Length: 192
Image (cartoon, rainbow, N blue to C red; front, side, top):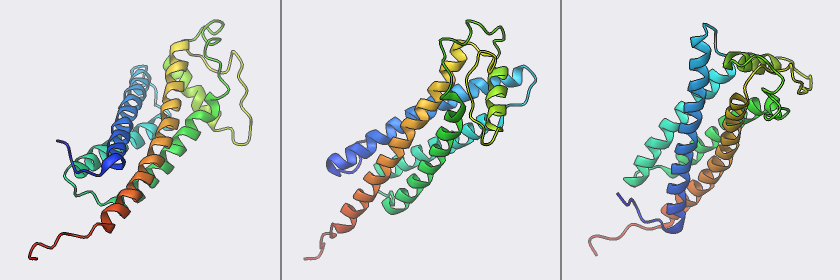
């Protein structure tokens, strides 16, 4: 299961794909946990969480398929570069959308003065704050009713989304370099 030998560039591509899959699976788990808590409380999950879950599920499927194609040495690197670039755009949108209101939160303060502690309250406040176009969101103790753990979990999703931005940019660069390297190699003459 070693795959093709593309040297350090190929090894880098494989490690980046593995790290992408790990980050994506972690985001799927945390987002699914939020959605489960919200649905359990008979509420509708915010579009923010549903969108995050959708993007990450598609991305993890893509990562697994392209990793298998890479190991079999049939991955079309030029197409892969374009797809990585599109997923980069998608995770940038997720990171910006999730991070916009979260950047103002101070997680250690949450829970010390707020009495509500449901995940739904957190997600609903997060979703409603995103609907205020053009308004700077300032943190106050009444802004979100959540536990410290819920806040830290949401910030973890944001942090992993930022890491995915870097990883997809890096895998896109590796992919275009691998395409150039593979297209520059002349096939061996079998008859002569």
